[in-house]
Length: 489
Image (cartoon, rainbow, N blue to C red; front, top):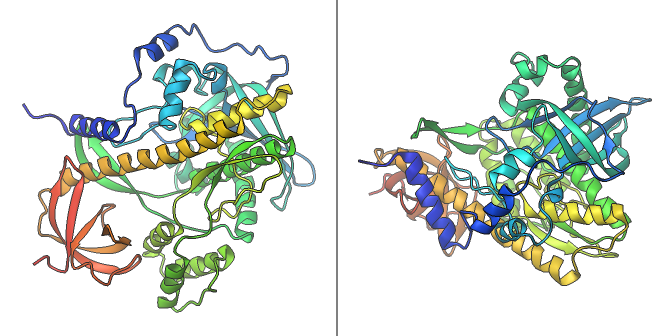
């Protein structure tokens, strides 16, 4: 009896995680520790504010069960709005160096291959006790920001609070509603005043975004591949795009992460920052722009690059995601760095922000749990729980393991794509080059969100080039999808 596609992909994911040093399962000591937890942590801190009466809501993926953040808006005077972002207080149930913490510190992130989630924390925590679930009281860390009518954050404060999620909302339906292309989701309409509050939040997010764009934040648009299952069988691959709801949350998370970094720096606390340094291959970005009739200066400049991207989106919106993908590949990946009192962090080139500390997803990312502990130490008047050597090593570990997790997710996605494409050997596709180095040349199909290796005819190609390819072969177990330039002969 043959295994289902879902079971086969899970087996592949486990094997690849093992091979690359990630732990797919929790050890008995972790499971015993979590089973012994009797309930959600009580709001024992006398400084925790009671904010349960506010119109908090979560907006996340349709199938998300580990809810890390809530948001709510409040109108002030002179066109200003107070935005509060509540972040799950994971540290209250996962103290440093307990068995659960040590597992999380090893993997440093949840892993999301198609068909199966391998969470950083056991599900009793991440989807229940430390998740900001609807209709439940939860402890949270709150980032409170006052945003002026012109989109500037004029004041920010961090504190503990007790919160209550009024509605669990999802990106697709909320994005359609915000854009005027769909009805209000039932969960939104069921809470009096919530629709108006989310509209308010959306307007503030647009202000924040406008300010970031003025400072050179890159307006990129990528197409993410999503595996669609029919039961346990891979049915298709879909292109997932951002919408107004995903942008709303993205803008709030960027603002909250920036406020957190500035809070820690203002109090002399060390921090872990997420940075993207100057592009590794700016020269190739300049070449890509020149091939499209646009001259970029020879030194990396985010504003100049964004002006080129805006121009290209207007000129050819259909192929703009392909250009965005090429630019992202050429910018290089992000990394975590430890920053100490008096030091200056490199900043995040793509977001055009100098201060950026991951803090808003402590159920899913270990860097955010570290940041939560650093915040609590400041609020309690305690010294940092980590010494410089420990924080530097943790930053390296988070960078390395996140890169490994991304590779696992990509490989298993390719295995899912191989399951679909194995009956299409010999077919031709239009593609764009996404990687070109000594170890190989990679292309991404334009009609399907599939990336594979170009094993014939790759000479002379570079990132961003358009090319016709033929599918040569696939290997489901290894996640190989091989193409040849032209007709493959």
